[in-house]
Image (cartoon, rainbow, N blue to C red; front, side, top):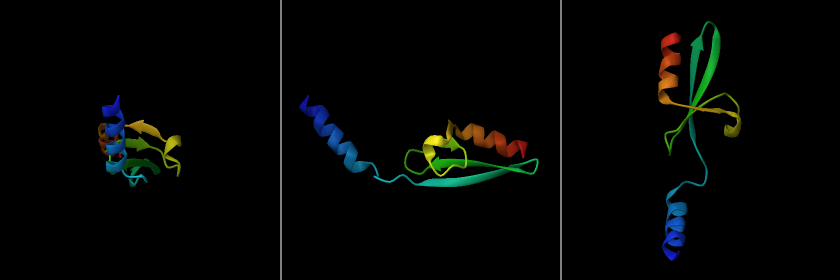
Length: 70
């Protein structure tokens, strides 16, 4: 049990408190779509909302497919 506590504290120190996202836009048929990539975890999201919780999780493959369609 003590090991889990120490490991949790160590994880908190290595993870950033604020998340930073790279924003990518894809133009398809005169409409702009936004993709975001979490710079720490490399997770991808679809949506242009300021609040990441309102965006839809997606993959890098989804982003690549959208670029091909554009």
